[in-house]
Image (cartoon, one colour):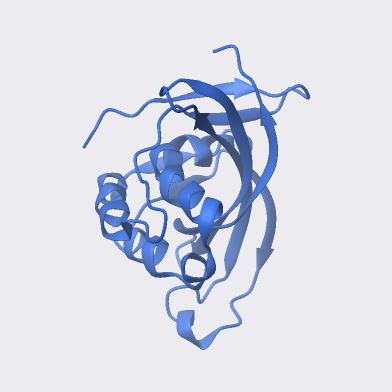
Length: 175
């Protein structure tokens, strides 16, 4: 696995953003989702604390496969697919700065065993560089993402997917 080039920054409103400084996954027509899944396997077994709530979110072995093959990933194309693929570099940091937004029961039969005790959703933000032809970072696009977390019988929380990635803004950082 390559060394991550990730750090935190604050936007004009003082909100934290995970800044990812390099693009690892490219693809005009098709992104290398198998490589993305391989990258995500480095997180399996990690436990990450959400700074705001002190909740612990675990990364289980089903996370890489779900991230790569979810309905959200299949319907995500273009710049948003590239953003989702490259967001994997900042998964730990995105969990740390996330803000809990909701808890809901499970409604789908597909997940009736895995998410029998419901879902939690968290919002997080990350930035990806826009690079010039001479490989210099011109600015960053900021994205908002929803972290989908499943709850188990014993109350443990497991990161399941990162969905609904939407561009929020473009900004220049002085890092």
